[in-house]
Image (cartoon, rainbow, N blue to C red; front, side, top):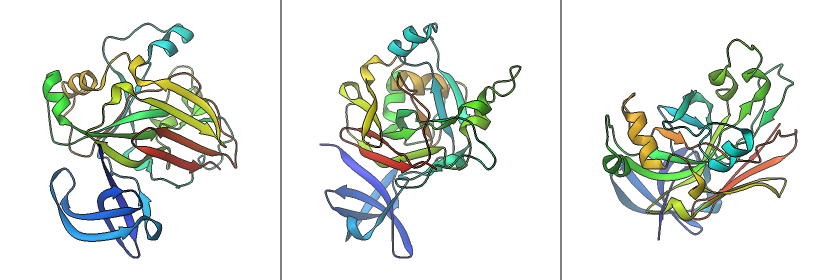
Length: 256
């Protein structure tokens, strides 16, 4: 059984703990290093869930699923094709996703598996990288598509994916959950538009972390979104977008 770590606001205070059904068992200290139970229990109904982590680095992958690569005619990568989302783009469950001021172009959802790093690490082999992954979560890697392609001489990945609120994470971080048998589902107003198996991933989590750690030091709380597959489409104002992975929960955010 996986543990589900959450961050929450209760009254004027914020905290973190283990989610157990409709209760949160409050912990103190550092989520990533020997957290300790306080014995306090908070009702989920009386709390508001926040993004389960505040990432120092927020990394996204492109073209990391075989089915999508085949459909789009992309070559199969041997290394992560990665970009940086602004760490200020993260959002939590229920937070609204809004386009930047004055932008009237297309805004896409992209439901993805997120890896949460549990310790500072550099130059890891795959076995070490597996041990550096604290847990997994849901990510919506939102993209302002028309900003990405606005200048044909310079694709603007950071700008298109780094707007405020363009990185919902949550609702929890699952530890001890086997990602390989899971599916990512994304629904718009209850209609499922993405439903793909994580087993179709080109570069699996431990290899992703290992290869990225050769190029940048990773720290506890960093998030890596593993890329999306087919079915990423524009949203319209008033829509509710829900990214779900069994064992983690449903990350729901209104758009517009």
